[in-house]
Amino acid sequence: MFHIYCPYCEEHREEEEFHPKGQAHIQRPVDPEACSDEAWGDYLFFRDNPRGIHHELWVHAVGCRKFFNITRHTVSYEILETYKMGEKPSITAADLSEKDKQAGVQAASGGWQTVGARPESEALNKEARA
Amino acid sequence: MQHYSGFGLVKHALSHHENWQRQWRNPTPKKEYDVIIVGGGGHGLATAYYLAKVHGITNVAVIEKGWLGGGNTARNTTIVRSNYLWDESAALYEHSMKLWEGLSQDLNYNVMFSQRGVLNLGHTLQDMRDIQRRVNANRLNGIDGEVLDTKGVQDIVPIMDCSKNARYPVMGASWQPRAGVARHDAVAWGYARGADARGVDILQQTEVTGFKIHDGRVVGVHTNRGDIGAKTVGCVASGNSGVLAKMAGFKLPIESHPLQALVSEPLKPVLDTVVMSNHVHGYISQSDKGDLVIGAGIDGYVGYGQRGSYATVEHTLQAIVEMFPIFSRVRMNRQWGGIVDTCPDACPILSATPVKGLFFNCGWGTGGFKATPGSGHIFAATLAKGKAHPLAAPFSIDRFHTGALVDEHGAAGVAH
Image (cartoon, rainbow over all chains, first blue to last red; front, side, top):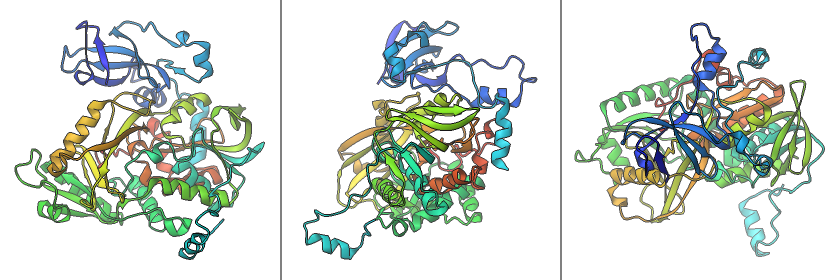
């Protein structure tokens, strides 16, 4: 059970008041009409999902009903920080110690990165289907 | 491989059961294999078994960072069914169901597959319309199914509250008689024994720490026991698939969530079928040992910790007690979490990847156990031929760019 600090209410409340809403800081393609299927698919479906430090969106559903961000460790589940919409996380990959890196702890890389945006993948997928 | 039979049981009784052969070896890794399978759960071991049995490829290693079947294979609620809505997934799960039906004989290992039927309850008019649509679709695909009314449900499960006074009255259900449960550990062990007997090396306590990739083609894996070469690598790592993909340099459309389940103290036989409800949101069956096996929804946040929040457990039990007031004073014995790899369309990914020779079998989300034999069978064919098996083709990763999703969310009694 999480005890979450809402940066708007400025209070700790129980997890039951909140809903997780997935990865934070996902940037919508600037010009959706012009972007490729790959970029659009990445935006819709592909996620960071790190085993380690994750930035995620939560909503204080039965409190102030505002969205905000949490940086959380996805193995220990420790909440490292909460911050308002539009702010940047202060804990990122750079904060991983050498020991963490050697133990394979990952950090969210932010934005989208992709299977599809690689030029060779379409050819590969065609090959696989043939 | 020592053949198991009633005669063998009697014979070994004479030596106090002290001389049974070990079920699989504990080999030292070779320098190179034809195929490496990353992940020694049910799906990975089944893949190795069918590679050896069907395709004659025996220079195979299964690499497992923990122990066999210690992940989601050991953490699920053992439900097996194939009543999915869409043609693609119905074909996939029915393929699996047909393999389940002969599995104990095939493996010479009792997986305790019990076709005790699965009820998917409907609590609203829309539920009932969806159920009718799904059962009709199932029948067109050659899958057994019936639509039951309230009385039909009450006849099968007399202890359930089917009265009009219930908070969410039971209006009916879909009923798949061929569905049921199986013994999860036995599935992993049976496949491991069968694969090992055909020459597959099962490497436990061996963790993959990276992939060796040359010119866009995989040539092996780094492990904590040294590098191992391979021509083809198949990753079957459920919740940790995304971690492996990251090592190989790409992302998957997957989020890993904790999915919790729990068992009660053992009771005398009280429930002889599987009951699932999406609307009230819980599912329950009774194991052969007598404990009630209970599950429900995932925890909504990304997590790798193999545990979730107590609030989720509370919601699950509220649902069970709502359906079965008789269980309100049953005590729960154990509770645990597994890490499920959920896809946006609640369907798996059986696919080639941007790295040549590297294949992924993942994204089974909350319902992978039922697919174990079929998944292994199809993935083995994919690895052996280097291209997707026809049943796997719709589940390629490029569907998330073409938009050709197989949207089973809410369609197939996928409850999450």
